[in-house]
Image 1 (cartoon, rainbow, N blue to C red):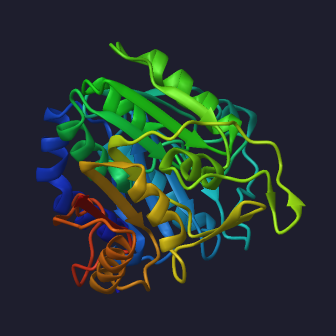
Image 2: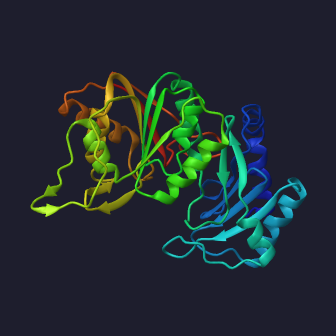
Image 3: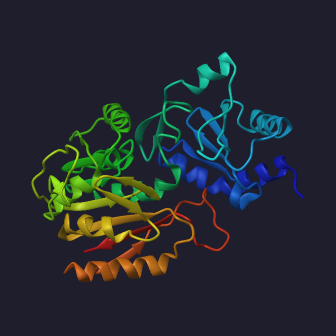
Length: 337
């Protein structure tokens, strides 16, 4: 079996060409080691600007393993500092304590860059996931190629990475929608980091309530006699470009997000909020969902809604997220509707 150092070195060599291209794009955040494919399942190592974030998900790293990782990157990327987050418990929350000096580094607000767009980053914050998901880089790049002069709706926006990228690329109007005010606050801060002709809007709302109103379906105040929680009232509006990136599963009084069994519950209103001749980018991060079957289900759902999918373009994650069979867990498809 190859040593951990050998695996890290092999991963670096495989990324050399990509890293050079990313630097030319003004990008300094990318995955250094994708353990599920590159030899250590459950271990991910990412570069975020001046920091390296190592995370373990299935089991805690042994002290010798962490020391070996630190030694390798001290040798190869000595200008960067490393933070380790042990997320091996069932809820995936960070469980390992750090020294005071390490904690200060982990909580430092770092500015990172991707495709010329600046974003805030902290290795440790009140949430659990990094503020920028690196496997969505190719999708954000594609949005930037399409966004000039367009109106953009970003659903499940998290920290508004897609929305800020769209605004940086010249979108005429951007609306980010997320149920988490803390995530949206990071998104607003991300927007302020960049020179933007149009400042993105951030809407704190359950996505179901927002997109149903925007699509014209409508969100009633009562469902089956039960009063719904308060939600922002919106007029129907269609967008030139809609980005839909739901979590695998979540439940609210307004509906259930289920990427395995009922993606269509979100897809239909998102489609109806897309202007005819516009584009809808859909994401599904569940590994066991077959991409071709999922796409066919979207086409059927569109036909039932009276809309035609005129073309479909797969957007593959960049090479720092390798796949042994070409079937990436994260599926991204751009639909022309």
